[in-house]
Length: 183
Image (cartoon, rainbow, N blue to C red; front, side, top):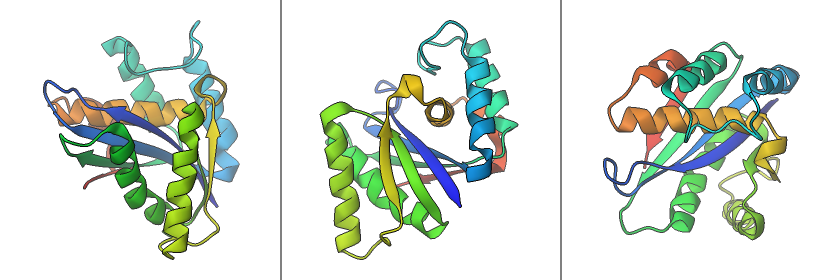
């Protein structure tokens, strides 16, 4: 069974106005420990890996590490200059969660946003009540600095943002195992 970790990102407002994305990294349950170890090995004196603020050399190192892992990626980009982050996230989740459930993926862990985590659970319940997804998919939330698997999703977010603003080099390294959808 597959497990997923997801992170969100806004794009560059000056170059990609109104774009918001939600990216998930998926791997088999048996490969979770390898994913976590690989991400931990990249952390050098940081509480967690984070694309934003990292040098281009570090970003290339991050992407190379993810490309060697037994993972796939799935990113959803919602573009609406009038939408707030909550609406962007909900729209992305409405697309992402049914796709994950059909793969099948049993669990997706999002980086915790504190009190805003409840809106993710409400979106899941709404999709279940509409029978868009089966009740087998679970959502969890984790603190980013204690769940290294979330860092891989952050790396995918960063690579997608870079591709959207004209630098496709990172996404090329990640290869065909990454799927991107614009809604």
